[in-house]
Figure 1 (cartoon, helix red, strand yellow):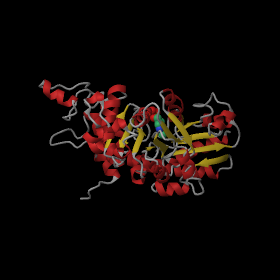
Figure 2 (cartoon, helix red, strand yellow):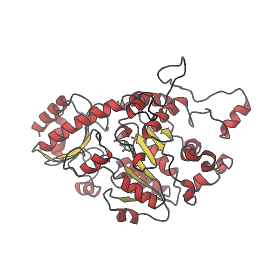
Figure 3 (cartoon, rainbow, N blue to C red):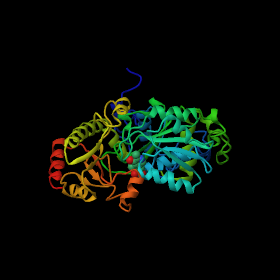
Figure 4 (cartoon, rainbow, N blue to C red):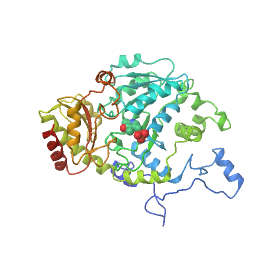
Length: 427
Ligand SMILES: *Cc1c(COP(=O)(O)O)cnc(C)c1O
């Protein structure tokens, strides 16, 4: 048999492998705590000398099996589930960067992450410089400072649908001696595995395609195990020097390739929480088992819808990397050869009200603050998430007033096209 199973098989089989007579589907271990026969048994767990469970804030068998499935899909050495995608990005950065540190991030990222990096982390003493994902290598390099600890980007940006040149970002990150963190939420490991292109850490909002049915909010941090922390020991003392809160244990020495993952659990999860409930991890597990099928259908449907929109005279512009002539078409051919995702950004000719009239005329596509769901849904940042901003402020934030984010689901595409077409007749 092939040593490395293919992604579809990993979706269905990786992570939870039942032994003889055990349940075929992952059991929900809905317990906060675990009992031991002797004091010594439990003491060894606290010293990180033995593996086992003691409290679900740190580890839980259901959560761990789902994390292991995602680690296998991404080709990483370890993964940790978090209670949201926001927590995943926060933890990925905090695990390598402390107060007084600095990160460089693509400016084309999810609004929540943009706030986290630009506003909230600043209050925590971590600064962020935003750079266009299309910046030259020189421009990217110029954003680095002596205290820079990570470079961040999204494989496919939410909501702009820009495709990241992962190899370019990885080259600069490594030349500067820092890890590249890639939020792979929209592509999912079915369509892109950023570690194969040089990324060191991958994050996910599992709320999106991985779940796929809008049942749970969750996140995940995956480590490739590749970044040489010891080589840059002065930058990453949290990983390479004794942790006073764990009996003076040094993560890189004690855990090798698992240093990043172990520190994230033993220190950040312990102190900051953000653990998902095992029941939510189970729901995520249900979604992951069909991820490969759903991604294929999302991409097929979105391609048809994008081509339809691009050909309609009432549509001003369409951003979808599967369209020939799209600014990211070439990068998508390289990094996302089997398809990108179901999300399309487009604008109608007209003003804010034109977009509103179109959305209000839709009968099948939902108006929802969500994306990457089996059900098609639509959001207009100027009317919804960013409604407090003026047209000028929106332009400054890089969000065209006309931008409509259409998340194409897995319904019959002809029903979707019928709905989109009849709503266009009403604007
Ligand atoms: C939604 C999203 C997040 C935040 O995830 P939550 O699960 O909503 O906290 C982060 N990154 C991307 C790309 C997203 O789409």
